[in-house]
Length: 136
Image (tube, rainbow, N blue to C red):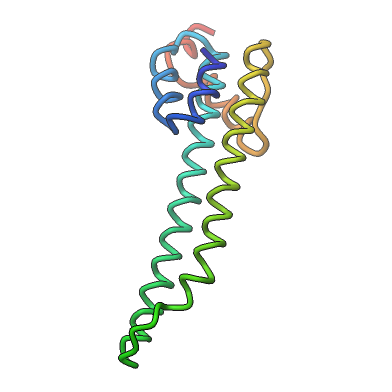
């Protein structure tokens, strides 16, 4: 199930790890890996949507400036920011893919492998969340 939590994040985003996290509350190992996947997906979504919000803010500001000139030209910000946004989105997807495969295989082998930065926090939280915290 820990392997599936990592693998499903590639295809389903946060939904797959969330389902596994909710179903397997009795296993600290599965909770840890599912929680890592959930936290990574939350960070990934925040960065992704923040990039789109910044892009649209710059786009609307550029359109409003060009509207006063009565020119039908496309705003130059589209040609400057869209490729950068696309590269960041693809880089995030590639990172998501690599993390899902690498840490899924480590979970399959029974390793308590932690993601960089968020892994230790997830290890602490997985031991304090759910019914298994009271039984330890």
